[in-house]
Structure formats: structure tokens, C-alpha cells
Length: 244
Figure (cartoon, helix red, strand yellow):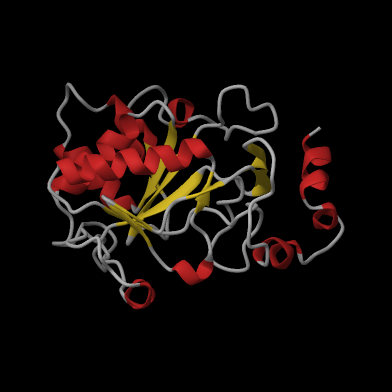
């Protein structure tokens, strides 16, 4: 069934080795209901929404990539989390890559982000929500992981921890990928009475300058494949700190 849906969205994608180029050149979402089709690293999507380039508490970065599209659940989540970041004292959030207009494989940068349920959020704490389009191409995030890969840098703050905690406590979130040093630091500073949510914080290479939020498949989304094993299985029902 999923392969049939994939073929319906872009018929050539299953027959060509250049699927990433086919999806990458699409400039508008596929019309129809919002559907996450396939798996996070092998799929596509219909009915994706564009996250507005600028909002009261967010800015989408690297606009030339045209990757600020997501399932309506993801767009709503990012708007809400950016408001939470503002409530915690930041100007908001800088949002990195989400998905292409029709999802699918990308020509660079990601194996996942294919079904509209993934988003990268910069570790750089925004001071302004008025960056120009050109500035968003030139500015860079900051690394919160030290060169020895075991500790965090001075860019890390309790606010980072609080924002990720808020994200993890959202029932729509399946897991959050971070640098291993970030997981270690969060394990050190979390209280004993408030840490089960940390099983969603998963150490993964390549996440020193952003954290990667992955939502669960939407309810009733029969065309979407949930990632396995679950974070509960990976952490053996605990907080996952023993594995970090």
C-alpha cells in the first residue's frame, strides 16, 4: 500500500536513481490531504504546509534550500515550541531544515526528513527575529559540543535544557537527536524526580549545532511507518542515561 502511495505522489521516483533530484526541484506541495507516506528515511508526503519564513517567535533559515515545509502537526509544533522558547527568555527559535515541498530524499545533508515530520532547530540562541533573507544564508549556528566530544561548550545553557524538555514532554514527539555530550550533560543536571522524558533524548552524531526533533506518525496515518525500536525499548523503560 505504501509503495502505491509513493508512486502516486511522484510516479518516476520508484523507477529512477535520481529521486532526490526529482523531489528537490519541486517548488510546491502535492495537493491533497496531509499524508506522511513511508518512513522517515524512505518516503514522501502530500499536503505539506509551509512554515512562514518569519513569525513572531521564529525564523526559517537557509531559505534558498526551500526546506521549510512540514506536516501540519510539525508546523503547529514548531510554532508552539518557539513561543515556549520566547517564554523562557530567548527571542524565539531559528528553524533549520524541515522537509522539501513534497518531502522525499534531498540532494544534500540528510537521509531522513522525507515525510514532513522532522525538523532541525539551531542551538544558536536568537537575539532577533528580524534577520534578512541574505543574513539567514550567511549566519551560522554554534556548536554546544566540545572538541573532545565528551563535554558541552559555554554556548550550552539551562535554557537549552528547558526547551528540549518542553519538546520531549509533548506527546507528538517521538525522539530528539542530540550530540552525545549533550545527552551526558542533561543526564547530569536532570533531577531524579523528573527524568523519564529523557528517554526521548537520543545521542546521535552530527548534532552539535542543532537538535533534531522527530514527531510520531500522525494518528490514523496508515501510510506512515513509525520508527522502531521505540525510545522506551532503546532505554529499557528508563531515561537512557546509562547508554550515553
